Image (cartoon, rainbow, N blue to C red; front, side, top):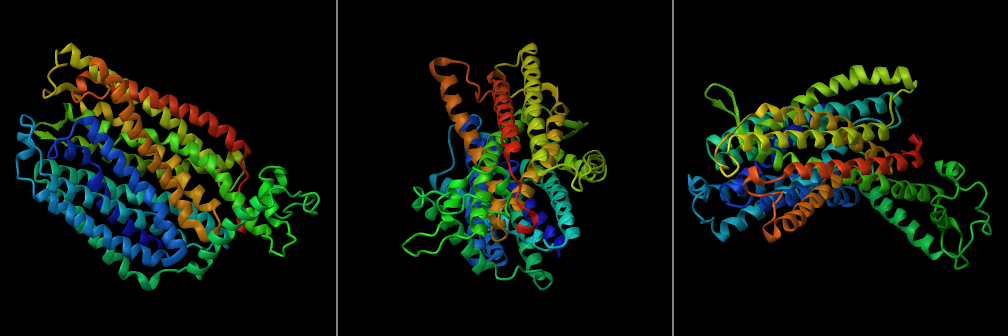
Length: 530
């Protein structure tokens, strides 16, 4: 049944990336937006799509359950994609080409329909994404050691399978959008989302459904929230005087770090008014969530570079020679498929080469810890931004050498293959950082809140997209005022995206240093509690 759920998610990812991969081209083409405005709009949308899983996970864990949430989200998803296709069909064919020299733009109603449908897709994705992955992981028994190890592999193979679907979407849909029509290019993802919904319904009898999901999850929110409330009320009371100072939470990991987060333990103190104190389990669960916050913050900062591959990476690719064979020119967005190719190579390498070697060295069944895996991804992310900056510097130098600085419509004589390494590195970063983050947050939250756990990892990417958009807006204003050299000039031959990449590399490096300090202090949640 886990493989069946993976098939559903592959179809959904095909649909999502069919829209996302070439969105900036649609915004700067048919909708006539500037590069900076389009980049901010893409970042805002992708950030919203990545933040909404928190709401979707809350609805699933507290009210509807994962199965019904997936069904409702899928229907919203299909509606959004259908309206998106309709909005594209309302723009006359060929108008995007004319807009290069004409200031006319689509009508206000077309823009409203487009953005409403786009955010309906984000809402649908917000309910679908955390629940399907958590529902797939639920097919493994947490009480069985072999199945727990298999669950770790599930996250790896989940990503590998998704990468195949994403790569196919990028190659096929981006080509159709650039060479056939945008309505047809948006209609294909809509069809695949319908297929995902039908596939999910067909497998309903084979799934393993967590028992008591709705009631227990509602209680989880209440009991963990009550810990903070009671601890605040008891803030002036002493743990020592109450008899809890010795042997505090004897069976929990907190005893290894006595004093850290002990203020939450005050929720266990019995009050004179007869109110029932919180249990040790409730306090441990609350502490587990608090300990995740610093890790989450460093994850947000370190994933800001990830927001660039669907914006500036694609716009850079448009300016160079995209011929891979005589007479065959590929869309710039097609290079995103290299991320999937890299994942297809990196996952088997990680599973069959890296992990066995790590197990031999560390003598641990999992090879490396989840936090170590995330840290490797952060290092690769910082290095990738430096590499992207060097490639962009080379592109700018070639444009100057050939007198193309003020000729943005002329192809820069530089092969698009120069951009391939930074896309391949993004795939490796996914395998280490993104997959590691998802497994970490799923594993370290209370059992009833695992959809929330996965949504936390997704929300880190969402917030990083918002921060990326904010940075672009501020830098665009600061560098473009008073006639200065705008880093995000619509004419990329006069822009300095390379400076932006170096800035992001520095942010990621600083985030990694903070992550090292935080991870050394982190106390893993016990397996038997999960």
